[in-house]
Length: 265
Image (spheres, rainbow, N blue to C red):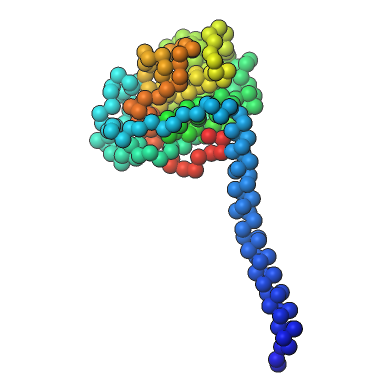
């Protein structure tokens, strides 16, 4: 049986339409996902003014094995590169490390709703770009909060009313490497210090205490993130040596991965 030219054209047109329809089913979810990510990224960018930006530091001249002990907290609990050579080598790369952070509201009268924190978390991720580290903050139900010594390999943030540190003192905030936890008490918000950055009050302590959990000690230079207090001179700077210390801890202790950076990074 021979198809007439008009019939053949009709069949071919139907076949082409069928193929295009199938391609649309395959491609549409991909472009839809990208569009959603773009929308999420735009929402994240709106959380903070564009001028709050930091660039990755250059640590190409450094080796993890030679990092100053004075910059470390609990140095005996930090990875030995002789035993973790691959991790230390990975830390020296320029790839962004993504670390999951569980966030709990314990009994704080001030910080008790997820919608209060995105701008501060965005600020933390902005200045942690200096270390090419991105935190993926995840809010968890209070009844899932682990014991102090539990789940030590999961980076955890706790907002509390007056939670004591391991020495029994009620500090405004503290980060504890052995437990893998950073705590923020309500007394923190009673400080009278002022700063030009309106997001500094919670944005600086949050990243500062995470720095302790990732192995950093206090520093004297007021421009650095790891200085104590809320000095107007604080520029939230991270040294290349500090960046490497945290990158090793993020990979070895807290399951950090070279992964897709979350939209709200």
